[in-house]
Length: 258
Image (tube, rainbow, N blue to C red; front, side, top):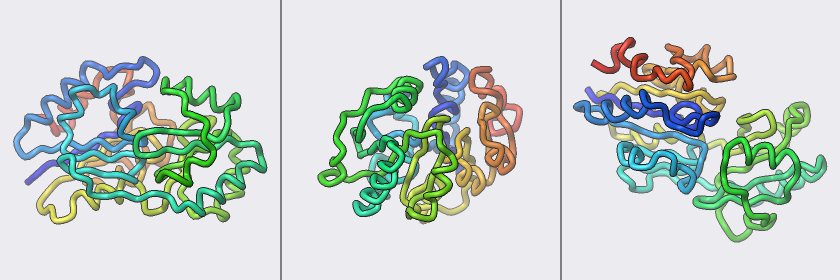
């Protein structure tokens, strides 16, 4: 039987606080990749240009899911590609403008934004990423796979749920990811594993956007640093906090590593 293990990236593999991949996590990935009939997958909300922190570790992953499931590869061959409808993007921009909310556009490689404000700066600085270029009309010329809404106004976000045809994922106290309803990590995994038989699926994550893949897995693992109770309730196991640097020991303790 094959074992296929998908990992989220931010605060599962890579510590946002310390800007490192803990030593035990590196050791874990290297040993898992060398086990017979074991295959690794990465499932991240980032696009392809924003995973440089993995360095050579990226080569360990047979499966790669980007932008919360909008783009997926197997052995570096594109399997799934699902951009957001341009009319839907226009609708979101219109709703956001009513509250002076800045909108971000995540394309295959680059990221853009409608305008800068304080909440944008909080989010960009906390994730230590390159500042997006201001291009409010970029969606007219490029495919957009995910939108960001830079706001902490939960009541307003709840009020517009029925006015948009996108799924919302809170990813920070000041922001939300918006993706097509046919784009999520669990659906992307299903696409990648079509035709596979006799396998055990393991999924590890910490975010709201990891709930579905952790729930669908044969073994679902939530990081203890997760702030999402629903994720922890769906999981079979709770792994140590990323900054405790104990993920290798944890995988040993639940017998995923021999």
